[in-house]
Length: 194
Length: 310
Image 1 (tube, each protein chain N blue to C red):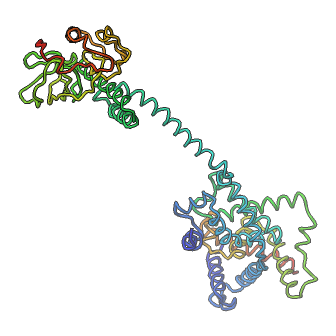
Image 2 (image 1 turned 45 degrees about the horizontal axis):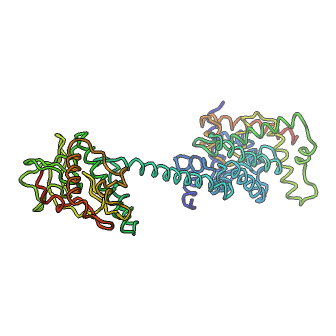
Image 3 (image 1 turned 180 degrees about the vertical axis):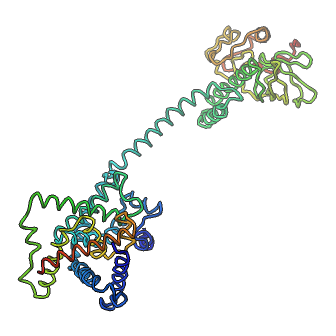
């Protein structure tokens, strides 16, 4: 498979997998196709998970698990239909939720430590990390849908349309959800700042 | 929920996404600015929160795991060792060869019983041709040719018995001539005005008959010619004789002309064969004392000359 084909399949139409040959490349677990998918989507999935969990190590593990799930699903004749990105983010979301549930059942000092500021680092980095930790703690108190819309809109930078496709909602519903999420987040951040 | 506020928030977010400053975006909505500002500030914090450096090694590690898993998930034949990859085709090819050998042997056996018009008949002729080409010894070759001539006779008789119309070419002894119907080694041959035939064919001659069988049980001749059949001490009705050394023959045995290849002689029934045999016997009797060891003895035109019978 040449680069042009890969570009056509995985770059120009990143959201959709439309044609039969594309499905066939995936179905055959073609090494080049898999590499292209990793190159195209791993960073997005990683950022999504990192945004949701706030931890790089956890983000790497879960992102990696997302792609392994993809390969297993393809092997079993399942996997994404026409929306590969949506499938990946959706799977990542489920894995994140599983991870959060596990965390609540088995609280770990390690995870909490990750959310603490890195006082040993440069002051600017420490400030950014403090900011992120505050935001992340506040986000964790939102509803699942609110967390999801913030992760997709502000973590991933997806458009309203892309977010609507992934969350399987109408655009107006996403707008309203985003408004409520920002309101809720603003209130919680404001509380922390008081 | 204030739809106007929701839409204004989205518009401001998009303008900031494209690089516009927060205050500039808010300038379009002075009446809503107080409500929008804290939301936009929160959005900026939420957006900037995720910008930690991405470890490239994470992609490499994960991709390596994925490719390894994909290799395991692919059909196993890709990873089979060379021996296992090729043993199945090898067995298949071997099986085909065995089947071909066995079946070709069976085909050869089956072709031996074929007659003109059968699918395997050309194969039978090819085998005979090959057999002749492989024989270098003259005596063996003549013996083989005699065997094949007998086969042609038997095949013609078989065609007549089942009333199959086919072209035939056989060699036999002319035993009777009755108008347009001749009898050649027991086979009735119809002679028409268009037959191409050698001159001087007489009773007792070995003749080649080229024609075709008909539904009435005859052979319609197309060409009749004197056959070039080697002389033989043994002479049997209906069969072209084969030359055989007569060193062991006694004068008495000359008259008996004991066949040495009785198994090869086509079965003759009816009076014709006996009639010819009688003719030979008579002829042998008339000249029996003249035969001596080493001389040849055969049914030929000279034998029948002077007999005058038909």
